[in-house]
Image 1 (cartoon, rainbow, N blue to C red):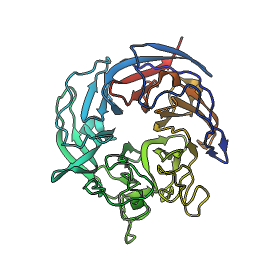
Image 2 (image 1 turned 90 degrees about the vertical axis):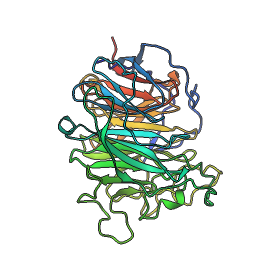
Image 3 (image 1 turned 180 degrees about the vertical axis):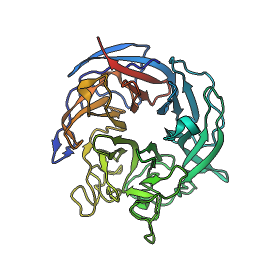
Length: 413
């Protein structure tokens, strides 16, 4: 199937200090617009610190958000506007979306989000997707949910569709409650990234819905990362099982809007990328039972200009490994490269951004990013939403734009 992509070496990297990137004092040169630029048809070739790379357009989609590679070749891709699409092993997009999805709320940045295949997908054909579920009694009210359904090769319809998890973050009824700090609208900050770990447990990110005061409530589903079985049940080993007043599905807390999730197979650790407030976007190494501080601790400024109660080194709170801005970085998904096509990138962390291109970090033997990142594809002006390694070792990227795209990165000539 088609799988190509290309990079550009960048400028003005973040400095690392005590394991945390310091905020930038000045915007990066020629920073692209947040809304994104026209892509064009490509292909594109770029030079990087480790040689040439090639970027190729696979398919055009509307607001593509998540991608899952099929064992028979090809992929399934979610469009945030509420569609599931199939691209076959030859790189051909099926013009008809896959049907059978539940009703969903798609206003603003709500909609269809992350996707993951069951670890035994070849046998059971189960597809999992996160989405913004609408309240049937009030179209302004929504929450995060995770559905699953069966998809047969070549089928135009999901079957056996059901929700395995519905968050208690029902929110949006007017008038909205009084909130601090100039927080955003109720149709934002859902989270919604999915990932199965090697033990077959499903991790689900849940945002604060722009009601950050709810996050530090250990019983709530706001601002959490959950760990559950493939049925949506509580698995053994979760940190707060059996503790009164605590949600037993919770694996970590204190998150604002966690939109990226990756497993580092070299270290066996979970990593997350997160939209913060102004100047507070983060990359975190996720620890069992960790509290990452939101809303009381952030290295960014709240939207009304207020400084948070704590900035860093607050007892009981875990500081980010990397923090970005100002200006806003707006992170997409992240990944750790393990493929054979780009040998010099082995173990490197790749992080998408809406505003500063694709960042490539060298990592040390513990998986921690080190030094300054190489900024790639910055001049393309794209909102890089997802970055994933394909089975053949190429890298796929999604651009979250109305005229969005699936692109493939491979070594250049």
